Image (cartoon, rainbow, N blue to C red; front, side, top):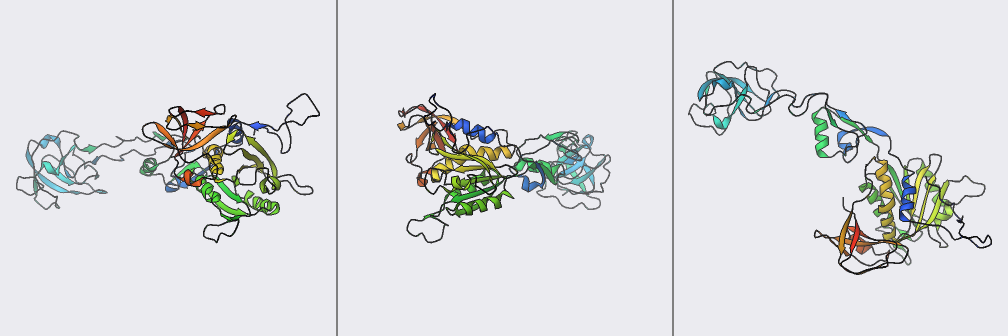
Length: 440
């Protein structure tokens, strides 16, 4: 982890030793780089195929079998010798269903009724689709459906059939020994289907990070409970836990930790036994009840949980941030602001890339595109501002709501963030802006 100033320390900023030094402010990129320096892909685990959905392989996968594993028919019809079709009447020697183990021999002047996917019998080198025959009806016309063969039955083949026609050859898809998927592949439905097809019941993937999400504040009540004077419903723990799960993590939501440093320290100690990452919201500013800062300062006569650096970032919203590692295993902790919009944007910018790194993703960042903004924008000097917006299919972006960090209604209708550079204070409508897309 890149070293940052300890809590309460100052960076030298002038020659006058008697003057207080101004605390360092971090750029968004500096803070993100420091966070990601603490992360690495989690170890591999072997899981059942369906549990691997949305995860990445940790090793190449090689096929142990050919696909298809045997020559089989791609049509319902008749397996025959191509040399016998002119048109011609052939004696039907049996039926072959998918999964058949015992196969009749198809010699000159013979045919076997065959179903799609069934193995091609010895002696046959082509399949005539049932539509090219009378279906064994003896009428000389194509049958609508195939019926079981009977002794002495013949089939009229009405069209010539080329050798190899309507046969799926063994290994024509995949041959044994071929690498079918490489390490790092994201496993979706098609990839899981392939693994099942080559006989794999389990697969090695990166373990999902276990993320503990804590909301702090004595004013918080859980949704569904009565909201008394001065109380608010806890929304951050739900939004952040959901965001962690959407990023691929296993998230545990712990909402409503009161403004009591001892209680918070106890909760954190409990989570350190299980969590790969801890995310808190609230209590990181400069107020009298900033419980996260107070709880994570070294305690005299007690065991320190670890080092957490509380920082000011040159961004809006989300200026106050905390980052460090706790416990003997150095579990990363990101302390986010308490305002809902600030917390969510901070998660997208810093926590999500950390989770994606733990999952072994090659690109951990949200996609950024250029768009034309439909409205005038203003931004504070020296801060990178992230405004909520709606991205249009015509390459435009429209701001949603204002810049205030409590506007959860506007946030719920946004699908992107409009990033205004640090050194830009105003942009007229029609300007091109960078847009961070929030949709997967």
